[in-house]
Image (cartoon, rainbow, N blue to C red; front, side):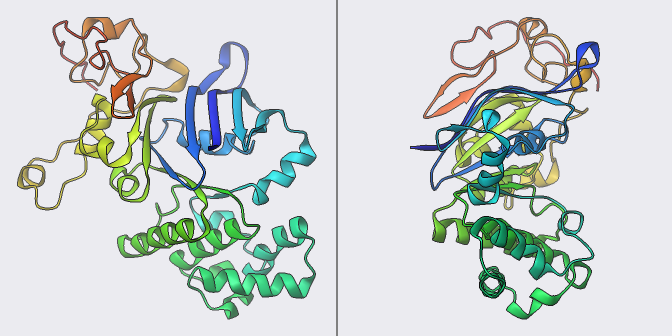
Length: 332
């Protein structure tokens, strides 16, 4: 059974002629107890998607479609119901813990706040729960009296995970939780997240620009480009052999251990994602695509079946009519 169903989700900033589409018709689902990764370059709509799940976007954003969490549409919830769902139903681990934690409050008080508000816990019970959560994420309970600046980056990220677990949610959204950390601490945090998800049967939606991290952590992987999902399927299959040329480019940007060819000639993707306020006609990826055909300039591509539980939005997938001659991509 799906815990989370995202149906034709759209997010637009501003209005009228100045409206900027950040998310354009995203459809995704996440089964209870499973892990879904969302990948893409900066500016592709990943964080906007994460914030939309609990309506944490600014007032300038207009949302459309449906976000069903346990069958309830988050977009139509009354304010009181939405407050109850946040933390207790779903919680978010933001990137950059130093910017998310309050610098003038002790971390124990910050972790205890949602416990007191949602579970109506007495101060003593909340304090004990804070100690349990800190020990659960590998920190001594005594660190509850510390201020954020007294902790290392990895420790602050563990505090953010403890806060996300405070009210025992069924879904955790992790928005690039390891971006600001060094490689060793990143590996520790990822192992911690995997362990907690497995032990507590929590569903995880993890956002990252690093396909290798998502392939190792998640069951399924969705690749976003210019506000849309362009490929979705089993995480390892998408990472090893992406059907969409953008997915292949992202995967190829990471050198593989033991692969001499990738070490000597690492491949990247020239240029940048398009400005959401000035999207190209047709397939948004075609100006950078090495296998684009003439039709890509004018015909947008919807997700189509790519076999083995996979979908991809490319003219070359599933008999989409990609037999035309490949043209040279524009210079970035």
